[in-house]
Length: 100
Length: 100
Length: 215
Image (cartoon, rainbow over all chains, first blue to last red; front, side):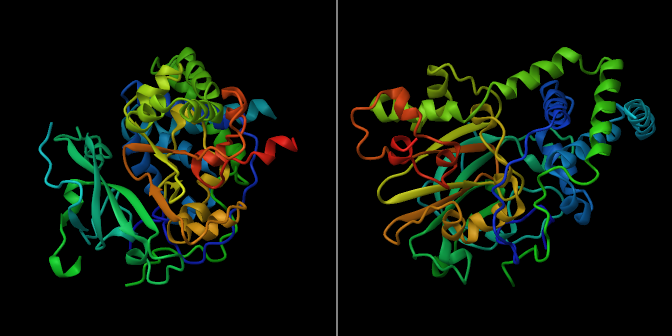
């Protein structure tokens, strides 16, 4: 058995949803931050993929595309000691509070 | 340029291994017989890059072609439909004559 | 051994669009950006430049490449042998670590692109992939039932045409060079480019002349 991301030929696949959602600003930001870190040499595309593949399978299936990217970027930043989970928690809570 | 083990036209078998960790060889081609279509160049090894490694030595990457009917028993399309996928050299071995 | 590695049965989410908890993730990426800037790991300028880089890329780039290849056999040969260099000739900068390969549709072979393991796509040329390209169902079905997948996009391939699927699993990103439709002999390069949609560059569609005539 390979990982949850290894989808080629999965059984039970259904019709392809061809609808398109408008890319949201936070998705653009997730894309840009992830790639900017790669371009600075702070992480690689392969680490990013490995981090996404390490998500719990149920979570992998539940999250949207850029939500998986954010989870992976966060995981790698913490793993590399660039940021801590606690400071991200704290800052995210602060930002959410300000939006209310 | 790293010398390559295979040439275009060579019959190869994808290793059937269940390798833990990050790999770029999907489950559906493992253990299957195909043919080298072209040599794409040499690239850093993603299985090392994914864990912060150097990815060195670089590995030859091949475009490998398969008959769809060799990949999926229940394939319903015509017998000359094909699938091409890019595989690193260490995932390939020479195909045994009787299996070609 | 079954070829089916995973079961998507009863899975109604495509794994692409923002989920119910998107707001929380949006807050986390903003928090990450703020912290990275505070610590001097990234600058706001780095992030802004990267957003602009992606916004500047779109399927129109692919359409330009195709239209030029249709009118200029020399360019077509260069596009097929070295896509990155050919793109640069038209001012499309796809520099970076990944390689690009253009595969040509012919009366005998129709090409279809997918990435089953993630969603690799020629982003440096075409921009972000469409949602359906990233969907679990496309990633799953494009390899084992490509004809049925194409049929859902209205593309029916005859049994005399070989369907060649390309799973971009490694360091190469693929683009399809579709066939020039009949009846377009008098058209300008710009008009020809107008026939080439994003879906044609992935292989779930082909350029059609009527599409323009009827607007």
